[in-house]
Image (cartoon, rainbow, N blue to C red; front, side, top):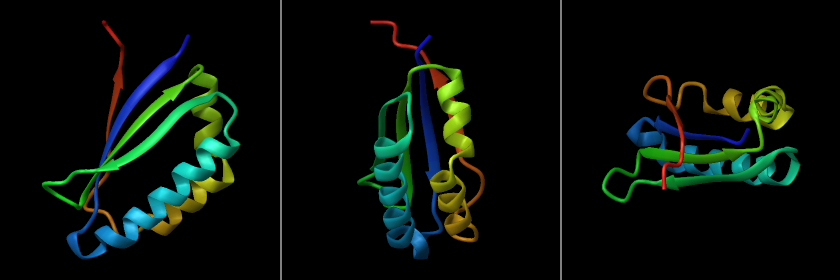
Length: 97
């Protein structure tokens, strides 16, 4: 069954630009390499440029688990260390309309 997630990540204000670059590359690699990725979009809040929102759509739970073990995902998280303002907030969502 298809899985959808919304993830909110807050960067440290002084790191927002660098975090944006890291996330853009990570999103590109995810869309390019991850089997089961239907959509993986990262957007930046206009009112608060230190806030990034991931909009993810996956074929199934196994696809998400594989993504989290993918070398580009692990590398992205290493590059983000020390640049974020806490852990991301994850929402598993379901389309109702």
